[in-house]
Length: 246
Picture 1: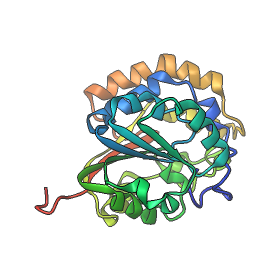
Picture 2: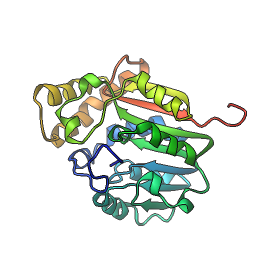
Picture 3: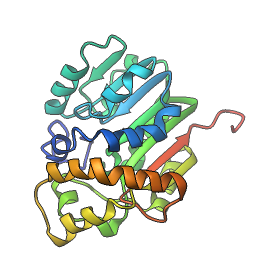
Picture 4: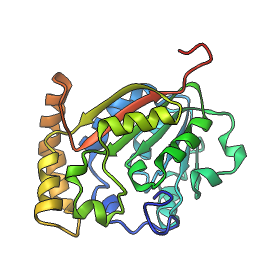
């Protein structure tokens, strides 16, 4: 999906995208946190099959969906070909034609992408260059190195992030952090069991669907009322500072 996490960035062979394609509660929960910032001109880096894209693109002025894996790009293009305000490109971010990157974007979205990239700070710096001053970076990544297991290895995750690590890397890339918090406390347990205890080598689509139906509403309600100290993922919102520092 991204440059160095997968041996071949032009092909993504992970099972996760297909297994997790239809999780409306989980995807809706993520986008609920991002939706206030998904406006105007948006770039999504690592759009995959369009599982996230198709749930927000009709609410923005225009969207550029960047996906380097040719097998995923084919599906992405088919999913969104009927939307005139959406452009799909089969490239790494650094290879996107310059004309597609102008004018700069109001927001950049990366959902389960950064963990696949070896030099993640370099890519964050590339993203900063295409987001306008006052624009936003919206990131969702897997959290906690202790949870790294067979399923992470299966989909070529370079890492799972500590909150402090993600914050430092966003600042190194030139962003100002607005929010960086843990997400999906209850999801830690099934991921730990599947990846560290059972050492599964295949994503359980049925289990994911049941968790989406039963587990997500519970943990979503919990986390809407109380901050959680840990979680399966991290969700972050950062801003490109304007000249006056705002």
